[in-house]
Length: 176
Image (cartoon, rainbow, N blue to C red; front, side, top):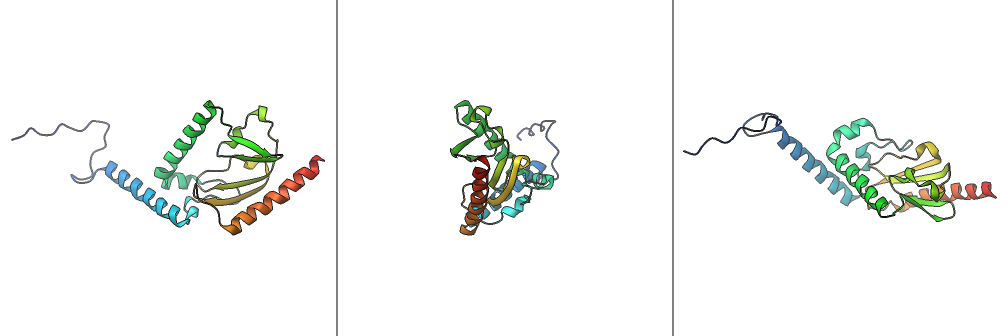
């Protein structure tokens, strides 16, 4: 007869039964959740699943608790990607036209040398998975949540463009 298998490491939780282990549940949950989000991504639906508040841009702790297998790698990847970009001289945001800035999740960390405004007239937030970091410094916040890499609908683009147009023209008028 073959020798018995070695005992599991002490840090590993005990199995619930000989056929099911807690880590198996976590792996199954993570896989199914990310499969669901992948399907919703392809359908361009379901951003509200992450519970982002459309008025404040905040995400409740319950979302992070329920959907941690999605949030954790998303946050980690975005942080590492931004940090790597910064080491290669990539700005977290750039002024593409006078008074018109484009940035990502970490746009709140714009270098002072770029001379960002103290107050943003309009912040258009196209994320569903991240809270808005610039909400404290913005006059008009517009949330149009989409899955990363998918475009908003035509009506959402129009709504965002109207907010930008009104905020930008008002900002330019105040500077003159």
